[in-house]
Image (cartoon, rainbow, N blue to C red; front, side, top):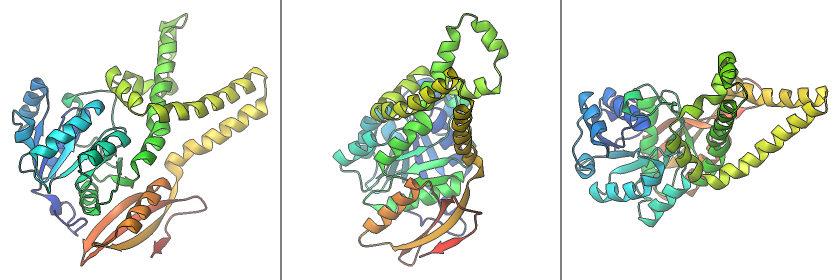
Length: 353
């Protein structure tokens, strides 16, 4: 493994032997970015036509997944969510014992549990880049799709693969690494990503059943287009992510329904003050997407020995809405630079412990 966070960040990973298994929208975008960054990358997809498309874009694609991952230092698993546990088993058997494995699935608990059953926690890092589009397939992929994305990585008992992969993602993709426990990711993603698919589907579907659907579409402006964008996502992909996180999605949907019922009751009763208050509350949350200020926290931990304190701190950073912007390994220490939301003022303070 290359030490994470060297001064020549991107150069530190140039030449790393990587593979991407599953070259659809996300996998294809990872594949193209890795190649652009100078990594020695191969791809593989179960669909022969997709394999041919990747070859046309100049990427080496063997005929078998085993050949694609043999001798690799890093493998991204990017296939459909239900296939990830089986793919993980296949790739682990075909790759070397020091090969770091990660995935990009939209839920984390199931694949993390599969890794534990397979005895792969020493080299598997569950991951999920929070980016995408309503389109699918390698034809829609591009090397910049994941630029500056929040990229969840789940730190486990073996922290060396987490550190190395964090450094690579920061250097190659310019992403914001959000460290979270798998269960915490699934809880947060339910409301941040999965429930919006339900709402988009409901709005678009109800519009299609309206008395004058063509008139609705003729008048559709930015609010309708933004609110229904992910309804155009391939239906099978949406079903996979919703079923993969069913319990958390249903739990969070209860809160969304309660808020919607509150709005509806205020509207029904003509309660302007209550309606305005609820939208003031919602608007303040929405503005935090772009107006949040952050403070910097720097922490160091020993590379070897007990890593409980390191893993606990990393998970606390993610649970608090923070992310990692730096990860350096030097002289037996790992040094993290984290950004944490600052609710009470401007960014800029540095907490060094």
